[in-house]
Image (tube, rainbow, N blue to C red; front, side, top):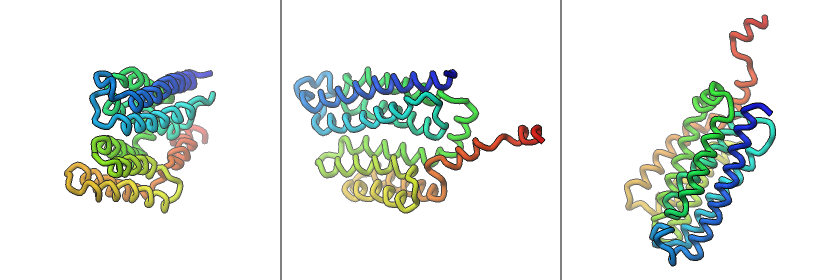
Length: 239
């Protein structure tokens, strides 16, 4: 096993530990969060925030499971899994208070290991190619954060569903599906929170950036093809 595979497996183990702890913390917030406010952040709606934490932590568990394979993942898939660890690890600091410190820290470290689990020049190449789609996903995370304090259940649910749709939109395999997820991600929550400033700005920005990525291969297939082609200097030397 090479060092990249070992680093990736370390990220997987840490991600599974952090994600599993996150699910437990979310259940604690949902069930007894109101009884231990000093530990759970004095939240006004601990049940909804606890369920959101369970959902987001489950995403990190799935991302960690994707890293468990023995061979190192291709850079686009590895970085997508890293995003699935880093976003939940950062997001839930605002949902469960002190209880999130341990799982959050573990998930952030796991995300760093996932990013480091490959050759640096290939990682830089993927980031340079996919930073715009990744920005749309990050904006989806911001929408979920805004939904946490959005008030009524319907508004909160629209924000969470919209945020998840935005996170997934750039990576969908078909252009039509990307457009559908993009609209689902920005329209309902922006309409329900039209009176705010941040929500419409995030919606317009996500829509503008998302539409510019429609012609890109969000799944990273183009990057993988690029990496399958030897650099020019190696091609020349082969001749």
